[in-house]
Length: 191
Image (cartoon, rainbow, N blue to C red; front, side, top):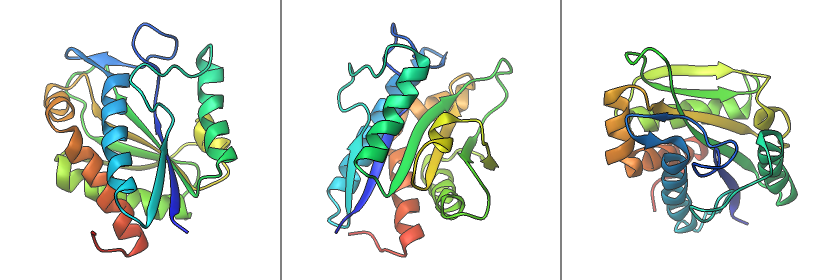
């Protein structure tokens, strides 16, 4: 049985509710979509995994407002049911100097925590962002309501010119970093 990983590309396309952040000419929902799609292809080309996407096409819109959008993502993962849930996001900050990758989990000392550490190492290695650490967050709906180990990854800051360039020019590096982190977590070698 392959390990089932649900990849949630956070937010909806620009112009819709829950569209996410913007910065340096980039739209969060588009970066999230690309990184998630590349990651799903990597996982689905590895017989040890099966991946599903919350947004299989660039025009997929989930829910009718912010609350129903995140609820639908959780419903899809829980009803599959996925073994792991990874939500992909990009950050923004009024201060353009703020940069780096953060990964949010519901609770420290859990399987999600160990997976997050491996994924963080992979992203920092292959995308070249700064490690801002693993952070506990009990507020995020997708971490509270999923029934499997769940992570919310903030890949980098769209509002920081260096992070934005990495996100624009190397979405595959972020996806590969997440993929290698998943492999490390399971003790697998690449196929």
